[in-house]
Image (cartoon, rainbow, N blue to C red; front, side):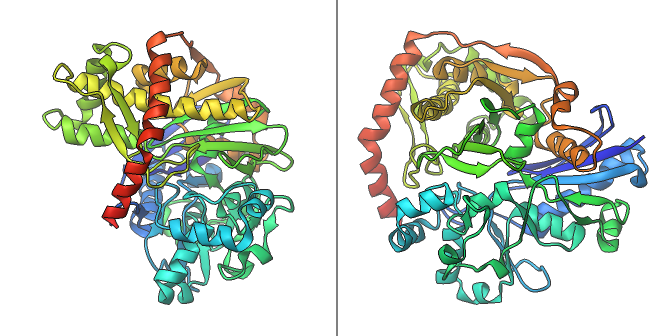
Length: 499
């Protein structure tokens, strides 16, 4: 038998699987970690203690529980949260914590500066993306402005996946899909680092080598073999961002296919025939040459459910809390008795791109209980998701098929609210493991053990959540949109007061 191994490093938890030639999971493992929030608007991970530690723990557990000989694993692929910004020295040693993706909004001033320097229209045209909190370029410039001693020592600026691949192989690589999030450093039209737009930020010598996700970056080194239990010489792919691997795991591959990922954030990927240029959405080359993807992502989603559980369900065990809260939410009517949540607890990414946006429960009265609040929270995330779907339609990119994946697919209230508010049916596949499973499939493609179309056999559809028209949701969606617009000046003022 031959196997592939996939490990994904998430925001709060990492997961891994060993998969056989038929796509069956023979072992799975996970390892939790925390997101570090040193101050409002910042979000970090520790590269060694979180990313690399999780990979090592999961790899060894997978080998032990499966009984698979390491020599039978023919390829390894990894994915991780991203895009991140991690400076390392000339030995690959991290110089600080990794700065996370769009939930970290520290580079607001640098975004304005770079837009003024190069022109927002030029950046959108050349890079495929407007500069937002998701962009890595402004965060490198923030480092240069605020921690010059770290910036000067940095030999490379990596993302999370790049760092794990480096620890496995000694090679500094990044896939094109991830690199497109390094705006304004990556030119999508030539699919290479942009020397003129990188000036004063980071030239190509300080950035990883560009590759496609299923290309082999290198092989497991002797040191990595000793730490992970994997066999020295095992091929390792270039890897990608977790959301892309998650999309692959449920069969997103043709133009019109959309992934709806229910994780710490809701993240959406739509595969398209051509490049979509819209400042409200993100663009990247898809994982294979000649393909395109249009993306969107909320700032806080599953993170909000964790926050609510930890703050308002302390009497419940963490294992039972989500099931109990979901049951309480079911007892509340659609619309949560007139209660609306703005889910902007870490600002917001697409489509409003407002790092100063604030979270709020609006419409509270003395009849509301915990179940109403939790339903309103889930519906608030669904309203934001509906806003994204509306944006795709306005951009002429209505999805043809939507595949749902992630831990949130276990929450029927959240899933149904998203379908009803967005007016979309969602397919749920048999396996909802997510990115780690997608990694294992990409590893199989990399060594010729599978073709892209084989995912339909590996992970067929299981059920469909059908959209239902609801007058309450239609009305409250309009009010949700109005609530943000009418209060955003207050949120901005509160941000200024907190600076």
